[in-house]
Image 1 (tube, rainbow, N blue to C red):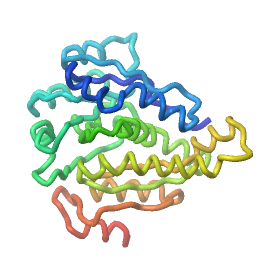
Image 2: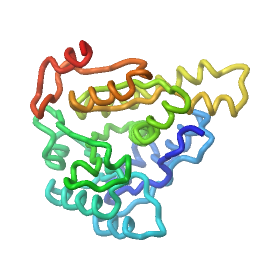
Image 3: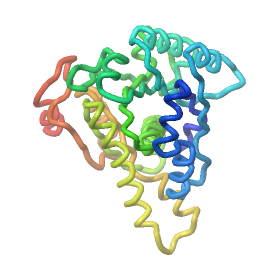
Image 4: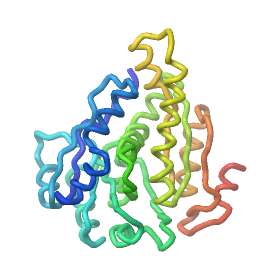
Length: 275
């Protein structure tokens, strides 16, 4: 059994106006349904539930009757308010990744203080949230990852698949030798554009190989054994992923410069590949 941990329920924290922007840019719910159908994924697309405020979001997360797999925050508030929300999410549901979504670079810089003037982010992530464990520091047990919305609904699909790949990579590589692609990039604008394209290419390639002479069940299994795409934003995270999955590493896609030891290093990508 592969891909056992899936994103089923997504909590979207957004004003009615911003959610309308989602829908007007392509019909988010319909676009997700179409993408899942076109990829022959034998599962229903994630259910999106919108709330307008952080208080409503926390109330939903506190409800033991509701299971949440991902939260997407698309709301224009100061970074201090966002961080307070993230800390509360950590206390309530440390296993729920939170994606911070902005509509432009200036808005992102206000939303997330980790993003600098060049739209680069220094995000240190550990695997505490994957193990559903709470550790001492909030940033080590909660995955909050910034993205920029550019009108492409495939970004939401890529965000969902990125989370699922990180959740399932260990088990799927052990069970089925699933290959791994490590993608190291710290520019939010770039990886927000590139991830949807990368997932589209991988799905199209796998689908073309399975196009003829296979049953729906075989096609679904082929899509589940597609390469996992693991996004890293620092040298340390990229090195950790390469070392952990070195026996399954299909390739590395990397920028030349990104954070190393907490500061931007112009040769970090070259050093990572050389290692």
